[in-house]
Length: 379
Image 1 (cartoon, rainbow, N blue to C red):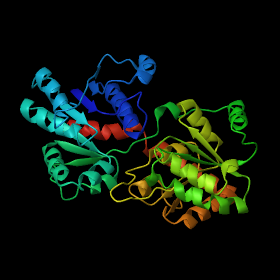
Image 2: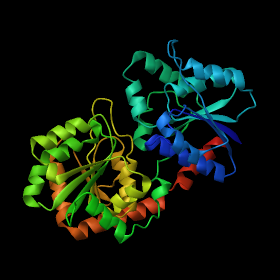
Image 3: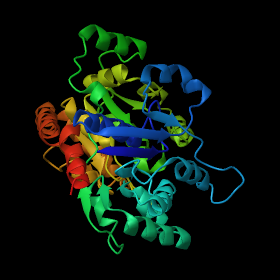
Image 4: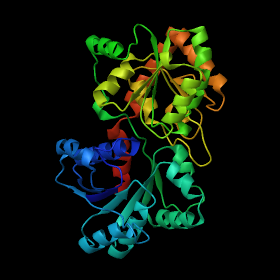
C-alpha cells in the first residue's frame, strides 16, 4: 500500500508528535509499506541537521497562506493539483485541525481515504469553539478510522460520529532504547553541572504550566529541609520557564536547581540514567491537558520510579503503586510527600522502576503499536 503523511511537526522538530510520526513511518516501511511525507519547510537553524535526515520520499511544502483565509487552503491546492485518485491508498494526519481539514477536502474531491490521529488536547481544545466543533465533526465523520494515542484521547471522541477507532500508544524514542551510559559520562555530567554526590530529581518537559512543575518548585524548600542532598534538574524549554525561574528566585533555590535546557538523545539517556526519581505532576487547565506522557515511559525504560499527575492520560502511562506514584499536581503537599517517600526508600523506587521497565519493554514498542494502525488500514 502507498500512504501520504501530512504533518506540521516532523524531524528535526522535537516533541511527542514528531517522535510519534518518525517512528510510525519507520515501522510502516519495515512492514513493506510505501510512505511519502509532506512537511513544513525547515528554518535556517535546522538546515544542517536536516542533511542527516535526508529522505527521498519527503517533500517540504509551505502549508499555509499568509493573507488568505482559511490558511490551510494552500496545502489543499497543492495536493488537489498534484494528486490523482490512485496516487495513494490513504492520507494520514496527526493534526485534526487544520491538517485534518485538508485531508477531508482533498479526500472527498480525489476519492482518497484518510485516517486521523488524535492526541487528546487537539480534540478538547477544538470543543471550545463553535466553528472548530463543526469542523471537528466533519473531519472525524469523514475519516475511515481514527487513531487515538490513549484511551483518554479515545474518550474525547464520545458524541462525535466516528466509524471506528484504535488506540496506538506513543512509545519511547528509539534513539535511547538500549543505550548503555558509561560511568565516565555520568561523572562528566555531575562535574559539568556541579552535582557532586547529590541525589537527582529529574523533570523532562516542554515548559508550560500544565506540566505541573510549579508545584515541585513551591515545595522544594520543604523537601530540602528534610533532605538537603537533593538537586532538581529540569530539561526542556518553553514559555513557562520564566515563571519557574521566579519561584526559584523567590525561595532562593538556585543552589538546588539546574535549568539544563534542550539536550540531544545521548545526553537525555545519560540524565535518565543519572537521576534517582523522575517527576512531572501534570495538571489540567481548562481544556489543556496531558493526553499521554511519553517521558514517563522513557524514565521507566531506564528503571526509574516516576511521580506523575492524575490528569488526562497520565494514569495510563503510570500505574499508581506499581510503576510509579500518582499525585494531584494541584496539591503541592502530595508532590512533596511523594518525592520524599521515594528519595528515602531506595528499595521501593527500585521496585517501581524495574516494574516500569518491564512494562515498557513488554507493552510499549513501536512495532506493536504501529501494527494496530497497519491492521486498521487493511480492513
